[in-house]
Image 1 (spheres, rainbow, N blue to C red):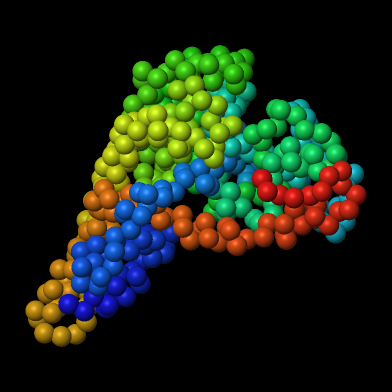
Image 2: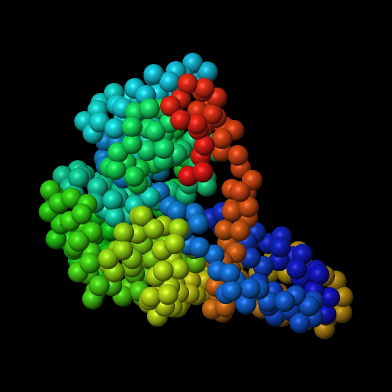
Length: 389
């Protein structure tokens, strides 16, 4: 069978109704023998992707914070200072004021953290008396190029000094665009999602508890930490079971209940946990795959009801009835495996899901735009400016 028309039709098809784009992974395993494509499963197993390659940022807001609803998150200072007129002293002033918890003077910065436990501590302790508290999960690769850097890195470069309290803080200049927000966890939803059953220490935190109290408490939650339950909970909180983001959250929490300071080990924590707790990670992957299948079956039924006939009319090549029958059969197999892939295909799809974004990120020169460009141009900074972090 000539599979080229089948591949062409499948590559044109937009099955992702939320993102309105073609599938990122074209699962054509049923016709691999005929077209001679080797499976990539073994290759990815030998060189798996790192779930923390794109570490998520967390932003905690409460009712009354600026633009916290279904919009982008913007800094309080509006309009933002123009870089052409921005001086080092003015930037130092903005950074210093932004660091003051009770500061009411608007600044051009938004604070986020890559420490999930810090975000939970803010939501359940520091903002314990606030209403409508929400944790935003942010994709840093979708932020404006050159607009964000680690707080201590910036403080060092402008001469206001580093502090340990800022080790996990990232400052974003101006805005967190809506398309960079992966999902939102309302505190009320967190409380009803099952997360407090997995991490009962969260339930017993007092409003005056600090972050170290939370870290210590989580070490006692190991007996209630079941990977399959974590998957169900995170899906309830709006996470995609086929994404690396949900695995990243799982690994962060697994490391925390096992006593690791995950925020200090982001680049190497996954391989460490996989070597020590392979069965727990395998159980997580199995549960995530099953959750994906459950969602996929619903989407598959919707596709056959609403789009299947029109897809055949548009894409099925002309020919004799037998050729058309074979084409429709192969097409149905591809559609089924897009929505309901077997475990190997699902695993490879997740491995490859970030590939194009990663390649684009590698090609981006963050020093050539935004705040980082401004810093690069300044000759009177305390230290040479470089942004390896």
